[in-house]
Picture 1: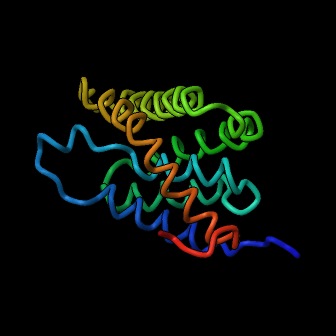
Picture 2: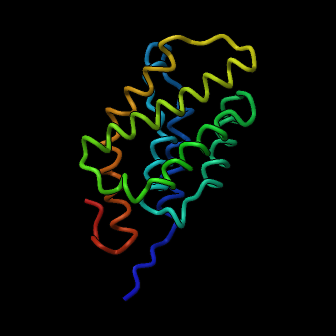
Length: 165
Protein backbone atom coordinates (compact mmCIF):
# COMPACT_ATOMS: atom_id res chain seq x y z
CA UNK A 1 0.00 0.00 0.00
CA UNK A 2 1.35 3.41 -0.96
CA UNK A 3 1.54 6.20 1.58
CA UNK A 4 1.30 9.11 -0.82
CA UNK A 5 -0.10 11.96 1.18
CA UNK A 6 -1.97 14.97 -0.04
CA UNK A 7 -0.14 18.27 0.11
CA UNK A 8 -3.26 20.13 1.27
CA UNK A 9 -2.53 19.88 5.01
CA UNK A 10 0.84 21.55 4.44
CA UNK A 11 -0.73 24.30 2.34
CA UNK A 12 -3.48 24.84 4.92
CA UNK A 13 -0.94 25.07 7.74
CA UNK A 14 1.20 27.50 5.73
CA UNK A 15 -1.85 29.70 5.12
CA UNK A 16 -2.73 29.54 8.82
CA UNK A 17 0.85 30.50 9.72
CA UNK A 18 0.68 33.39 7.25
CA UNK A 19 -2.54 34.56 8.90
CA UNK A 20 -0.93 34.32 12.35
CA UNK A 21 1.99 36.43 11.11
CA UNK A 22 -0.27 39.36 10.20
CA UNK A 23 -2.77 39.01 13.02
CA UNK A 24 -2.95 42.39 14.78
CA UNK A 25 -1.52 42.34 18.30
CA UNK A 26 -0.92 45.06 20.89
CA UNK A 27 2.47 46.77 20.58
CA UNK A 28 3.81 45.02 23.70
CA UNK A 29 2.98 41.55 22.36
CA UNK A 30 4.09 42.38 18.82
CA UNK A 31 7.75 42.11 19.85
CA UNK A 32 7.14 38.62 21.24
CA UNK A 33 5.35 37.19 18.18
CA UNK A 34 6.98 33.92 17.12
CA UNK A 35 7.83 33.60 13.43
CA UNK A 36 5.06 31.08 12.72
CA UNK A 37 5.63 31.04 8.97
CA UNK A 38 9.36 30.34 9.33
CA UNK A 39 8.66 27.56 11.84
CA UNK A 40 6.02 25.99 9.61
CA UNK A 41 8.28 26.14 6.55
CA UNK A 42 11.12 24.57 8.53
CA UNK A 43 8.83 21.76 9.66
CA UNK A 44 7.44 20.94 6.21
CA UNK A 45 10.84 21.21 4.50
CA UNK A 46 12.18 18.81 7.10
CA UNK A 47 9.35 16.27 6.92
CA UNK A 48 8.19 16.53 3.29
CA UNK A 49 11.21 17.83 1.36
CA UNK A 50 9.89 16.52 -1.96
CA UNK A 51 6.55 18.32 -1.62
CA UNK A 52 7.41 21.57 0.16
CA UNK A 53 10.46 23.14 -1.44
CA UNK A 54 12.52 26.29 -1.54
CA UNK A 55 10.11 27.78 -4.10
CA UNK A 56 7.24 27.33 -1.65
CA UNK A 57 9.23 29.25 0.94
CA UNK A 58 10.06 31.94 -1.62
CA UNK A 59 6.42 32.48 -2.57
CA UNK A 60 5.33 32.45 1.08
CA UNK A 61 8.01 35.05 1.76
CA UNK A 62 6.78 37.21 -1.11
CA UNK A 63 3.24 36.96 0.25
CA UNK A 64 4.52 37.99 3.68
CA UNK A 65 6.41 40.92 2.14
CA UNK A 66 3.25 42.11 0.42
CA UNK A 67 1.13 41.70 3.56
CA UNK A 68 3.68 43.50 5.76
CA UNK A 69 4.43 46.15 3.17
CA UNK A 70 8.13 45.59 3.74
CA UNK A 71 10.96 45.60 1.24
CA UNK A 72 9.89 43.21 -1.51
CA UNK A 73 11.99 40.08 -1.33
CA UNK A 74 13.29 40.51 2.23
CA UNK A 75 11.24 37.71 3.79
CA UNK A 76 11.40 35.74 0.55
CA UNK A 77 15.20 35.67 0.71
CA UNK A 78 15.40 34.82 4.40
CA UNK A 79 12.75 32.08 4.20
CA UNK A 80 14.38 30.65 1.09
CA UNK A 81 17.73 30.52 2.86
CA UNK A 82 16.42 28.71 5.94
CA UNK A 83 14.38 26.32 3.78
CA UNK A 84 17.53 25.57 1.76
CA UNK A 85 19.49 24.87 4.96
CA UNK A 86 16.65 22.71 6.27
CA UNK A 87 16.40 20.86 2.97
CA UNK A 88 20.17 20.34 2.86
CA UNK A 89 20.35 18.89 6.39
CA UNK A 90 16.86 17.41 6.75
CA UNK A 91 18.07 13.82 7.09
CA UNK A 92 20.35 14.75 9.98
CA UNK A 93 17.95 17.17 11.69
CA UNK A 94 14.99 14.77 11.62
CA UNK A 95 16.69 12.20 13.84
CA UNK A 96 17.86 14.64 16.49
CA UNK A 97 16.37 14.35 19.98
CA UNK A 98 13.93 17.13 20.84
CA UNK A 99 16.43 19.27 22.73
CA UNK A 100 18.99 19.14 19.94
CA UNK A 101 16.28 19.71 17.34
CA UNK A 102 15.12 22.78 19.26
CA UNK A 103 18.70 24.08 19.32
CA UNK A 104 18.85 23.60 15.54
CA UNK A 105 15.61 25.53 15.18
CA UNK A 106 17.12 28.31 17.31
CA UNK A 107 20.09 28.47 14.92
CA UNK A 108 17.84 28.57 11.85
CA UNK A 109 15.66 31.30 13.35
CA UNK A 110 18.78 33.28 14.29
CA UNK A 111 19.99 33.03 10.69
CA UNK A 112 16.56 34.21 9.54
CA UNK A 113 16.71 37.22 11.88
CA UNK A 114 20.29 38.02 10.87
CA UNK A 115 19.44 38.01 7.15
CA UNK A 116 16.50 40.33 7.76
CA UNK A 117 18.70 42.63 9.87
CA UNK A 118 21.35 42.58 7.17
CA UNK A 119 18.83 43.50 4.45
CA UNK A 120 17.45 46.30 6.63
CA UNK A 121 21.00 47.60 7.10
CA UNK A 122 21.66 47.59 3.37
CA UNK A 123 18.35 49.38 2.75
CA UNK A 124 19.26 52.02 5.34
CA UNK A 125 16.52 51.16 7.80
CA UNK A 126 17.23 51.49 11.50
CA UNK A 127 17.62 48.30 13.55
CA UNK A 128 14.92 47.54 16.10
CA UNK A 129 17.17 46.26 18.90
CA UNK A 130 15.60 43.44 20.88
CA UNK A 131 12.79 43.31 18.35
CA UNK A 132 14.94 40.97 16.28
CA UNK A 133 16.03 38.65 19.11
CA UNK A 134 12.74 38.14 20.95
CA UNK A 135 10.95 36.33 18.08
CA UNK A 136 13.90 33.94 17.86
CA UNK A 137 13.54 33.06 21.55
CA UNK A 138 9.74 32.76 21.45
CA UNK A 139 9.90 30.75 18.24
CA UNK A 140 12.29 28.35 19.90
CA UNK A 141 9.96 28.00 22.89
CA UNK A 142 6.90 27.46 20.66
CA UNK A 143 8.64 24.91 18.42
CA UNK A 144 7.93 21.71 20.43
CA UNK A 145 4.20 22.50 20.61
CA UNK A 146 3.95 23.51 16.95
CA UNK A 147 5.92 20.44 15.93
CA UNK A 148 3.58 18.11 17.82
CA UNK A 149 0.52 19.76 16.25
CA UNK A 150 1.98 19.54 12.75
CA UNK A 151 3.10 15.95 13.38
CA UNK A 152 -0.48 15.04 14.19
CA UNK A 153 -1.67 16.76 11.01
CA UNK A 154 0.98 14.95 8.96
CA UNK A 155 0.02 11.58 10.47
CA UNK A 156 -3.58 12.15 9.45
CA UNK A 157 -2.53 13.19 5.94
CA UNK A 158 -0.36 10.08 5.61
CA UNK A 159 -3.18 7.86 6.93
CA UNK A 160 -1.08 6.72 9.88
CA UNK A 161 -3.63 7.80 12.46
CA UNK A 162 -7.31 8.14 11.55
CA UNK A 163 -8.17 11.02 13.88
CA UNK A 164 -6.84 14.42 14.81
CA UNK A 165 -7.82 14.11 18.47
